[in-house]
Picture (cartoon, rainbow, N blue to C red):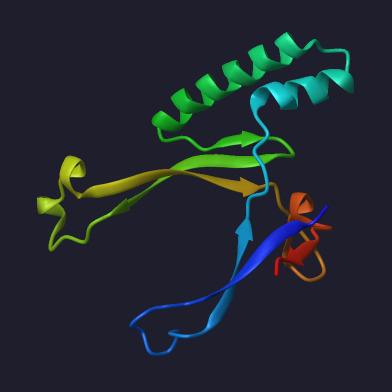
Length: 135
């Protein structure tokens, strides 16, 4: 299966990008924790309820750790951390988190390894992806 893409035209007042075309991904379905747990239990010695219990415990602990400002690294999966988007202010003295923070997001970065020859990062989770443009 391939990642589905839709080609859309950019509509912006910025003359440099107005009218240009870009690709965006299309989500074809949602896989919930129950389906993931069922598939994991089919391919391991763990019961579905055990998988769900562990995943829920990991999520709760990740939340606590990230609330303390930490990045959570989950081995070959990658790293999770909170990030914010805030208003611009004229000076640090007037910054009010309750007023100026507009959005909090959880950022995920897949595990990467640096190629020693090229010095470029390689992300194993992102290798071998296939794309299909929807008509």
